[in-house]
Amino acid sequence: MSKEYVLAGDVGGTNLRIAAVDAGGSIVHQESVETPQTRIASDIVDAIIRVALSCVANCGMDGRPRAFGLAMATLVNSREGKSLSSPNLPELNGLSVADAISDQVGIKVFLENDATAAAIGENWLGSSKGVANSVFVTLGTGIGGGLILNGRVFRGTDGTAGEIGHICIEPEGQACGCGSRGCVEQYASATAIVRIAHELAEVSDSSLLAGRVDFSSKDVYDAARLGDAVAIETFRRMGRYLGTALAGLVDVLNPELILIGGGPAKAWDLFIDSLKAEIADRAFGPPAKTVRLVRASLGDSAGILGAARVAFDAEGTQ
Ligand SMILES: [Zn+2]
Image (tube, rainbow, N blue to C red; front, side, top):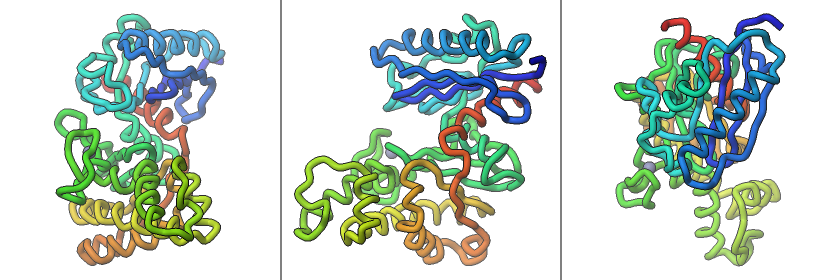
């Protein structure tokens, strides 16, 4: 098939996925492997190169991809194509990932933080399509974020902007992987949901979660669906914490839309009322009234589609 296309990748701590994406945002072909766990940077870079070349060979498109957009679960300097810091992929810290891959594959590589890429993907083809000012929040092991302002992605001076998960909501709170304390990701991520449920279940004999040593955020969700008071209270608190952080963003940015994605977003009706109440209580009236909260719609393809958009846009300006 003779059509313009780019390579787009999404590299997380567990899986590494690369796709050929056409200009309309269709994933023409994709391949994925487990992210090497050797903690050696070159093993990850080599794996990306191997899957990328395989993707080009097998995608059925004529010619070479225009560029390669790569979303990574790391703090990224997108201008320099450098991975700066990551609890998930620490072996890449300080590495010029874009250059390392570009030299081998012979295609220009553009690096993007995975949550920022997902924000771009949602703005291209998902829930925030056509919206000029939106905040994207993704809930998982941690909390990621991305900002679309005045119709463009906002990356800040170094390309590190959008780290919503590290907004502090408790000055003396839980220690965070970023080095700070009391970050919202310690109170509203999937990991935090489990911790809060453990704390509440410890002092409750009647909870379905009481006495259980090992459970997941999905177990807390299932218990809440069965009417378990501890599980319901866990999500109420999680919504309150997240709403506290988002109220600040509503005041600072006056967004039209806040999109929430990731696994725990499935518990939407369990946390959204307490989240909205917090925004209504804390933020100024007009922006609090304007902002709409919606679920992200592209699921785990948002990052790869955003990376593809980055590749199309960046290549066009070279
Ligand atoms: Zn933090």
